[in-house]
Length: 151
Image 1 (tube, rainbow, N blue to C red):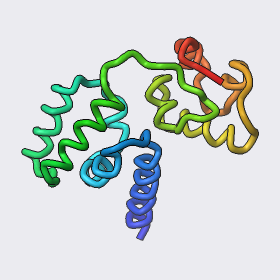
Image 2: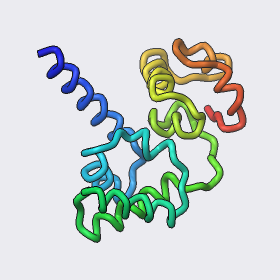
Image 3: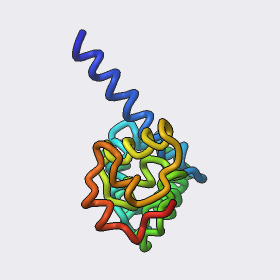
């Protein structure tokens, strides 16, 4: 029974994390196909070129990922556009999703969710000091990416 509850909790957390991905064409196909085997952190932690994403998708298809050619193309376009090698742009910590904050500031999923939960409970963050005071967030990581923080 405990194992079933833990598995159900993991599925709910994973589904919630997938929902935090940036909007855009191909998001639904990416969630439907990729979430069967992977947590969103696997995609969001990588910054690959279009060709590298194509190789990764081909590998997953060879391992059994099932989708139509159109769905694989939509996934390729979505991942290339949202998780390509381009330089990171500043992230507005008052508007961004947890996944966006995680990707740009190189935080853990737990830290990025803490920022989102904190701003939901206490209102918008106004200063860097506000951000570094969020419980559960390593302020050294924030300071290392200070040029990518926007309010």
